[in-house]
Amino acid sequence: MSKLLKLLEMSPGGDIDSWVGPASGPAGKRAYGGQFVAQSLAAARHTVDADRPPTNMHLQFLRGGEAGDPVEYTVARVFDGRTAAARRVESRQDGRLLTTATVSFAAELPGPEHGHRPDMPGDPDSLPRTGPAGPAPSMPLDELDIRIADDTSTGEFVRQLWWRATVPLPDDPAVHTLVAAYVTDVYMIDPALQVHGHSMKDRSHRSGTTDSSIWFHRPVRADEWNLLECRSPAAARGRGVVIASLVRADGSIAATLVQEGLIAER
Image 1: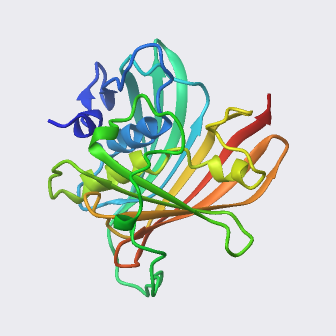
Image 2: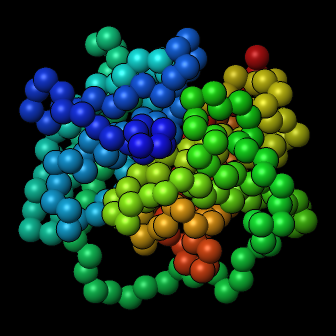
C-alpha cells in the first residue's frame, strides 16, 4: 500500500466510534495539518452510510501534533436524518486535545447547479515540479505532484497550485475526497503573507493554520490534475484569511475552502 493511502486508513480504537490514524513521521517533527483534516473526515465517514457523501467540514487546530505518533479520533453522532447526518470529531495524542471538527453528510438530491470555469489558467504540464510552498517533512511528496504558479497580473496575489496523486488509487470516490482534503491544506495560508512580500518559507513570521473549512460540491479525481486557486481578502490582528476554489481539470468547481491562519510577527 502507498504511504498516502496508508495515512488515510483508520483502525478501530478501543471504544465505540473511536478510530486511530497512523503516524505520518518523521518523529520529532510537527504533524501536517492536512493529516488531521483527512483523518477526521475518514473517522466520521466510518459512522455514516456510504450513500451520504460529505457536504461540509469545519476543523479547528487547537494544538500542534507529533508527526511520529498515531492519532486517536473519537466521533460523536450528533444527528441522523432521512437524507442527512452530522458528526463531531475530536483528535488526541497522549490524552491532549489537538483538533475538533464538525462534518455534515447528505444524500445527493436534484436541484439547480452552477460553478464551472469556461477556461483554465495555464497548463500544469508546462510548469516545473515545484513541490509545496515550504518544508513538508511528513508528506509523502514522492507520491504527489505539486506545481505552483503565482499570478499578480491583476494587482492581486493569486496562488495557482496544481496537484495530483501519482500512485494508483482505487475507484472509490470517498478515497479521492480524502486525498483532496489531505492535499489542499498544504501551506494554504501562505498567500496571506505573500500579499505583503513574505512567505512561510522565509520564516519571518509565526504562521500556521488555526481554522479550516471545506464545502464539497462535486466528486474529484485525485489522480488527475486539480487546481487550488487561492487569494487572501483580509488580514489583521496577526491573523489572515485565505479563500480558495478547488477546480477540476474540466473547469468544474469541486469544493470551496476557507482558512484562517496565524501570521504574527516574530
